[in-house]
Length: 252
Image: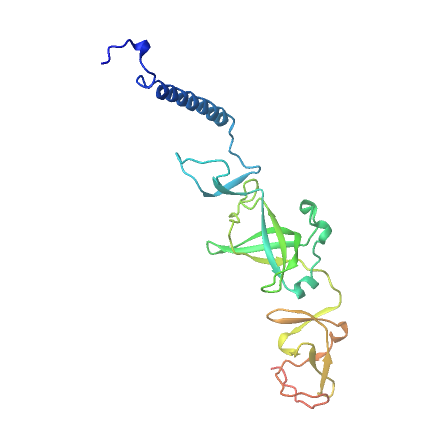
């Protein structure tokens, strides 16, 4: 005790600067609290589309700042599937052109049927090609077309079918262009890339060069109507030449 009156005591002895600093800190914290409460009242967390949450990135009570990613969502009004296409596929499809890239909703691409096995049964979904990506993949040299399926989770459809879950593996069947005068011949009848072995009326080999549009596991599809009534040789003949005499195996 110094015996002085309080009003004559030094400010440092009374801790006045520290007290004022503490009061200022309290006022600042109260102002920050009111500001945060106003921001919270105006905060709405919503997506610009009807969707589902794929992954949650934060939890209750966790502190987040501006720009923090809260979750990963995806839309459920439609789904898009990238379909790899070869040059041969491109040649037989009427795909949307570059002018359709900005108008996916009105694109008039070919119809697509996607299928997958769910619960032991084959399920199919209908869609349509809405655009192509316009570039070639440098790794596998394929083109990519994008198919759109409306209401993949069947939230608004009248029929009962399992949803096309995001991340599913599917097979695609695309409606091709209509070509007249195409015939299907057994795949083993094609020699090399573009030769067909025919049998004439004298049972002699005639090697015919043909235009193969495409092939599958069973047939080769050729654009040549004149071959409709011809006999194709499906037996594997070593080193055949034009005019070679062969013996035809009669059907039992």
